[in-house]
Amino acid sequence: MSKIIDFKSASKASSKPGSKTQPGSEKNADSATESDNVIDIFTRKPLSENLDNKLIRITPELDGLEMLYANSENQDKLFSIKILAWGLRTNGEVVGLVPWLHELVPCDEINDPLNGHWQGYYDAGVDELFYSAPLHKIVELETAADYYEYQCESDREIIQEIPDTIGTHAVLSADKFKSITLKEVVSWRLRQDGSISAMLIDDSKMVSTPVLPGDDCLFESEGCDDFHYFFQHHVANKIKAQDPDALAAISILSET
Image (tube, rainbow, N blue to C red; front, side, top):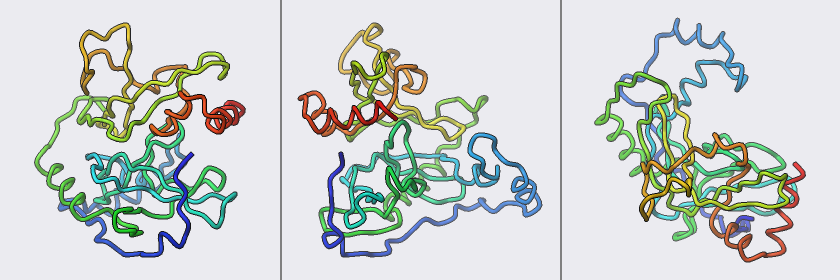
């Protein structure tokens, strides 16, 4: 359900300036060692790794850059999807973020032979493949992180909300995909704990239009029992048009 790119069309590879460590991000060695010995029960990773990878600032991707990925069933091809945003981690790294299955995922963490594994970033305008965040996004995120210093009382406190700029849709179904509802994602909220939530419209609470980020009628997708997956706009439009291939893909997802 993504655009296919042959390896030949992504032949120009570069090493654009990558992320750099923020001032003050050095950690005490003893403290890091202690964290390495503590395992997060949800991610099965050392606690120190989770803390280093925590997102502290996000910014929308506005120039159409894409993520490339491959899967085991099409080893001679690369696929692309639009990057939603770029995120700054606690350790100073900047990484692309894409709606992937049922959550917003850092591109470099996508590593599933069946569903896909990250191969890099792609700029279709200049036919360029690269592996690090663009320098202007790094500067933007680091500058914003230095300027905005939040004092939060709760890990669930919202520290940032950005609009969805790529037409992401959420797939809802209450009857095991016998019927589905497609809802546009209005925005994405970053919380103090580094988690990011997709915000959908509760039609019963909508007062005015257009619905903008921060509206009281928005609710989190993960808090909805009927939520299953995210699709980008071109796939969602195919589903709305009853496209056979799109409906077949939905049928496959319903069996997983």
